[in-house]
Image (cartoon, rainbow, N blue to C red; front, side, top):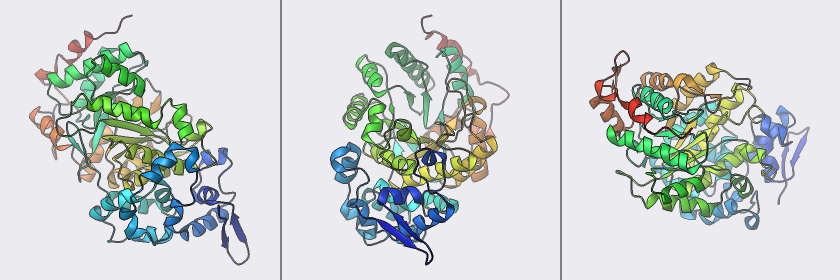
Length: 469
């Protein structure tokens, strides 16, 4: 492993290896400080960024941050690298690559063609040289379109995950939140429940309820119960009507082991969902969530900064052609992202890196109540991500998840972003909203004062799915 240097004329900075250089070049965040990886001063951080700018992109194909033989995520990244796609930027340094990304030469077509030739470490490196507006501008130029029962990621569109969580998985409470979200135009990305239990019988019950409501009202969307992939596979084997298979993923083999998964298990989950052939306009059946700090919290970070490991998690996601990926950016807590400023920066980095890699990135714009952040910070990140072309955000009643106990975005937040930035729901879902008398683009929500007759029985219909006890 080579050492890296930057000489100011009066001070010479030395970085022992590429991992240290990447860590020291990262904008300040509490997780890297906790791990003892962060720059000791602003001067050292700038020196590391200047040194990183001179590193050839091709170096990342040879100087591996985690050895090939020691980590299956590294092997995946190396083995899947497309050298032909990489060729247009192969001679560039990280700094030259940044300049190219900001130029007119980097457009929707060229960036899509380049994505298979980029490794997570390359995109993490270039993100460390970018200011906020750079992260927004480049991500906005990336287009990643996915399909299952509707089409997500099209230009000028913003989707939402309707998240009707309930602390006891009560079907009546879930149905009430679901109805609330639908009547505010949410739910085109997915209607996704975080279950209070990973019990397979309970998961199957929730899947059946979601499927019946979607079928009854002919909603062009997909459902997901965000259970562990092994539980999802078991539910499919029991005949559960499963649209998407969910899993939290990380950027190292050891961290994924902490989640109880490996790449082969994810492939099994994907194949199980594909075997059901439930998609109508596409067959992308995987849903992944990521978040900076997950590898460090599992003591599985290998001395690598948390933002680089987050990009490696996006590399894992890319392998499985997912319908949805999102960073749960402020969920892990202030130990990893201390305040609103760090959360905003991290959310934009994650979105930028995922989009460059060809991943359909959304964001759970969120924070925990013990972080130094508030809803004003989330409004800023929400607006910036909307400008950056974020694929989807969360929609939760009052922006307050009563099961997971964190603060995120509401149905109203999505309406705000769609109106301010002239963004529309997914096209198939927008047509359903219009035909249902709920929402017309440019005219807003139509039924805030009166529930359309066709929806009056949703809650009653959900009650028959009540769980035992």
